[in-house]
Image (tube, rainbow, N blue to C red; front, side, top):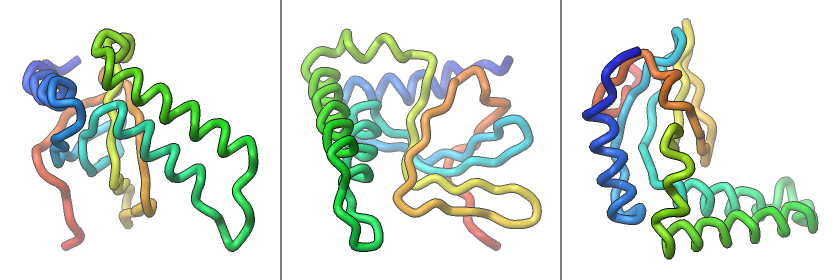
Length: 132
C-alpha cells in the first residue's frame, strides 16, 4: 500500500473547511485512471440528493427519490454541524466531476459523484487529466 500522508493532509483540509475547498486529482485504481475533484462528504451527499430530485426525460421524481434526497441532505447538515459525525468515514474519499479512463477512450459521466475506499488507490497525481 502506498503512503497516503499527503493525500490525507488534503482530505483533512477539505474536512476542516467544511467543503469550502475542492482539489483536482487523478487517481490510479486497479488499472483504471479516475480524474475529478476531491470534495467533502457533505458536498457529496448534497450533490447526490440533487441528482435524485432531477426530473429525467420529463418524468416526475418518485416519492422514494424525494425521501432519499431529504435523508441525504439531513445527514450532510449533521456532518457539517457535528465534525465527529464525519469521522466514521475516514477510509473513504469523495469526488465529483469524475472522468474514467480505460483503453482506448475516456468516459465522463455528467454530474457524476464517486465514493472510493482509500485503500483501493494505487497512486495519484495532482490535477485533472484532459484529452490530448
